[in-house]
Length: 115
Length: 114
Image (cartoon, rainbow over all chains, first blue to last red; front, side, top):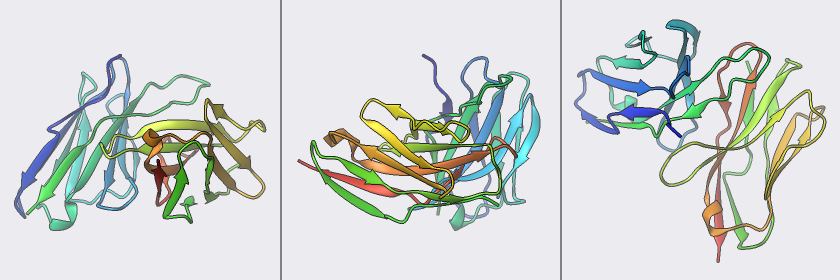
């Protein structure tokens, strides 16, 4: 079965540079979530989109922005990168089904290293 | 805001034995979902088991079962017949009705000794 695809899998950037992470949800899934997992930490929810509209917002810095496109893929744009942005960034997707729990399926993550 | 607490940073179990990982949470909601996720060295997040708060019956998935105590806000994971492949970081997670976003605990690293 098709899974969530994230690209790139690894990314190295310098401080103050920008980075764009991409997420391709499972086919027919309409919701995308972004999580950030710092070294030795638990994943923290950043933001989510449903049908191309932002649905929930968590602890996402103002330097970050994200969007979901018409084909449901999502991009997380990160500007003015800081050392503390080094983390594993997970994307998850789900399909909203009325009266059912919308289980999130996680991608393999993008490891961002800021030097 | 909801919080999830895992009080055991590390646990160790002998192969074929049983181990229980603890999780407590704090919420004012009455309907919610609780999860255990496994994160092996590959860092992939794998759903192990899910519990709906409105269900009194504890969820089970093969060798994995939970002890859900709603009044105590406790949600422990029992792994029976532990296998070497069970070695991983385990995260307890909460999802309430306010939004479909997961709140994770700090994780418990499980080591399995042969």
